[in-house]
Length: 170
Image (cartoon, rainbow, N blue to C red; front, side, top):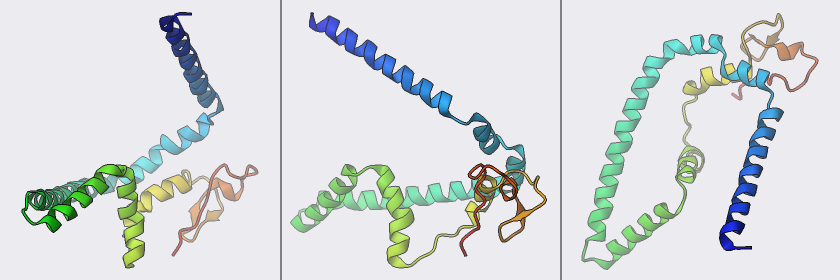
């Protein structure tokens, strides 16, 4: 068998495995639950008044991150160009460390590890609407769920795990 034919057979097998995996995921997905959680017009309507504030927060955080990034980047570039060997080493170690780790790891460490290490608390008010819409569907149940008397069908559901009504940790 020629190398070209062998490569073609391997590629066809890889495509078949990919199609089978995508088909399995599509068949095993609970599409009614996905539509209830992701395409919930009531949750979207509840979040609509907060969108202007979220927009301005995004602009503010973007400008802040750009300013800090530009300042630190310029400082590190000047340190790399310095004639002082210690400054070059510090800049090189810092740059190579952050170049070598995934960006997601940096984001997670800033979001979780640094607040834990320094005892600061991230404001949870931005998570209020998202957690409520994920926790409970539109108010259809007569029985309250959670500390704020939000209503959820899990209180009367015979299918455990259909809706996860969790109380917010205080």
